[in-house]
Image (cartoon, rainbow, N blue to C red):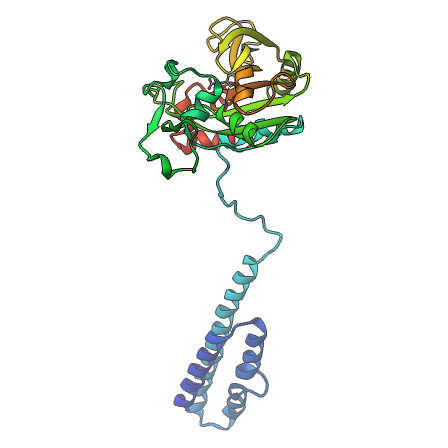
Length: 348
Ligand code: DAH
């Protein structure tokens, strides 16, 4: 008899351990403890046993019943836990998927504003030749920006990259996005309104405001009867969207070889609202971009009739825009990839 009880217990334990649902547990409860179960049947035999046997077997059967119940309850707990886990109303754990880099956000933001003003986005090349980076932009051979201290020249054989190389000059990492103007105007004819974002490279010593690689956005527009007030209107509209409605612009005469007339543009300092602070060197103004009317030599280099067409152009640093808008005082923060810095811009 004892052996029989042990066998039932083992079987029950095994089957219960393998049960995969509450329904299955119910079935096993009926099988092992129900009215027609072996255990119940054995209970009915107790009255006909010897006195001593009665007590012994009765105790053993009760114990077996308790143990089977215990197995059932323990297994049932498993299903309780599983059901809790798939509670669909339970708020999910936050998954950290990372975010876009702040510079990418600012870059996209600026492009979007110009897109809404009717500009088309065209990406230029990071590896350029001297003709596109300098010559076609009316930058003379003796200009200091052509110096090896201001431009990264590449040791590439002329035939190796991009096919044609007008002027047969050296290849280089573009030092500004202005060659995008040339690339576009060579291929397409006016009317044109183009914005061209991208990386630029200069062998500058890295400090709080310089990096050997940074981001620029070039913009230009060529059509009949384009004049300086169109340039002012576009830039003013951009500055209002990007900074704030109450921003003021100041155009200061300047010189760039590729524009005539040329200007540097300042915005009223967003930090002190023009009252004077360390960011604007107490002047109330911060320089943000260069611009001007495209030089006739540049239009001519691209085969555009400068008697019929005029254009304006501008170029700005994305890093600088981001620094001004978000009050970041060191350009190196953008490139160090310290999550404590980057994660501040979740909402941008
Ligand atoms: N290429 C200039 C630079 O890197 C920026 C610039 C100034 C671009 C005036 C322009 C412009 O298109 O008209 O400093």
